[in-house]
Length: 49
Image (tube, rainbow, N blue to C red):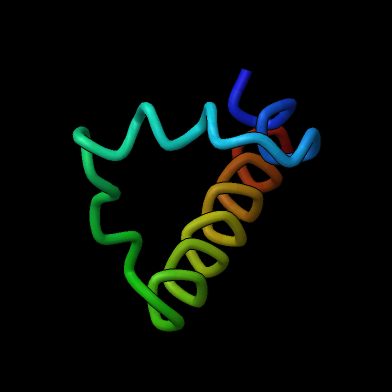
């Protein structure tokens, strides 16, 4: 619903504004998320052998 509202150019997605947008970590959050993803992959690779 939100994607179609944004792609369609209407303001339907603004109905979710009262819920706010939580802090997503900014630029450092992306780096930390990538590091965690790499750690999980390495752990899976080691455990599978």
